[in-house]
Image (tube, rainbow, N blue to C red; front, side, top):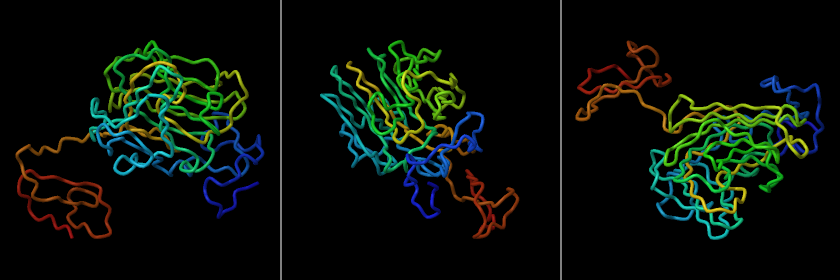
Length: 329
C-alpha cells in the first residue's frame, strides 16, 4: 500500500506495507536500511523539523507531574506519565539544569515499579525507523541497578519491545542496548551531582545487521563532546526490529532499587542532533549599568540602514549609549 497524497501523517498503514530491497534510504544509504514502499522520511513525523521538546521549567516546585501540567511553558505535554509503586515524580528546583530553574525529579522505590514520561504514536505521528533526541540528567548517587534514561519502543514499553535504549550503569557509565541483547558501556565514568547532556541517534534497518545506536555525551551546555559512541550491526537475542513508535524518559524499565535522578531538556525529532537547550549568547559589549535606547534592525550588512517591512531580520545590535537614527522603517 502506498501513501495517499492526502492521507494524514501517521496513518500510512505502515505495518501492512511490504519491504523492498531496492528502496534504499536516499538520505542515509550507508546504513543499508530498507524502506517500506510508500514510507515517509522521519522528518515528516516526530513533530516536523524541530520535533518535540519539553524543558520541565513550566511546572511548580514540589508538584507531582501529570499529563495535564507537563505542557505550557515546558513545551510539548507528555502523552503519558507513569508513577509506579511508592515512587515519585515531581517538578523540582534542587538541581536546576535549565535556565527555567525546574527539572523533573524521578525517585524510584525498591519494588519493581517503573517511573517515566513518554510521547506516544498519537503525538509522534506513527511508526518510524529513525530518530534523534536529547536528555539532560543529574544524579546524586550511582544507581544500585542499571537504570534507563531514554528508551525507544514499539507497541508497548515492555522490556521485549524496546529496540534502542540508553541507561546509567551501576559503575556510572552510559549503557547502550539494542533489544534484549548485550549492553555496551561507554568509556567515561560520570561524576555525581554533575549535569550531563546526552544526544542520541537510533536507526533501525529491519534486517538485524544495520541497526545503529549512537550518542554524544556533553557536560551541561558544552558544545565539545566528552564522549562519542557509535555502534551498528548490533547483536540482539531476539528477532530484528524494524520500527519504533514511542519514546520514554526516566526509569521506564523496572529496576527494583531506590534511585534518584533529575531530567530536563527532553527532545525527540526526525532530523538530527538537537544541540544544547541553553544556547550561549555572545557578549555585545553592553555594560550592566547601560540602558538600551535603540535596537537597530539590519536586513543584511551592518551598513544597510534601509530595512523595510519585508526584509528578514538577521542581526539585532544593542547599543549601550544613545544611538543615531539608523533609518529602520
